Length: 176
Image 1: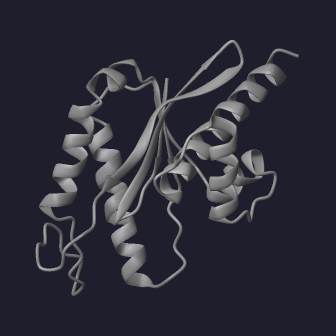
Image 2 (image 1 turned 180 degrees about the vertical axis):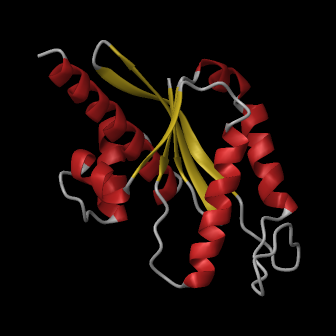
C-alpha cells in the first residue's frame, strides 16, 4: 500500500492507494486541514516568525489515529517535492512543513519515504508536465469515479497513481 501526500501549510491532500493485478485502487483519500495561525510560533527562523502551530501538529496526529489500520499496511510514502515560486517566506515555511511531515513519518517503519516532483507526476498521469489543477482533478474524478474535496486531494491521488505506474514500468524494464 502507498500513502501519497500533497503537502502545504494550509491543507494537505492525501491518498492511500493499492495496486493488485495491475489495477490501482484508491482505498481512502481526503484533506488534512492545517491552516497556520499567526502568533502561535513553534519555530523561529532568524528574524522571520514562521510557525507550525498546535493545530497543524494535532491535525497530523489525528490523521494518523483515524487511519491507524491503513498506516499499519502502508509500505511506501510518496510526497510531492516542495515548490518554491513565491518568495523567501513561503520557501522557509514550506521547508519547515516538509521537514515536520518527514519527521512525523519517520516514526513509522515504512520501506520507503520518497519524493516526486510536480512536473514528473503530471507528465505521467496527465501526459503533460504543466497540466492545470482543474484538469488533474477532472481526470482523477473520471478515472476513480469519486468527487475530490479539493485539488490537493486529487493531486495526491494523481501523484500516487503516477508513482505506482512509474514503479511498474521500472520493474518491467529491469526484468528485460
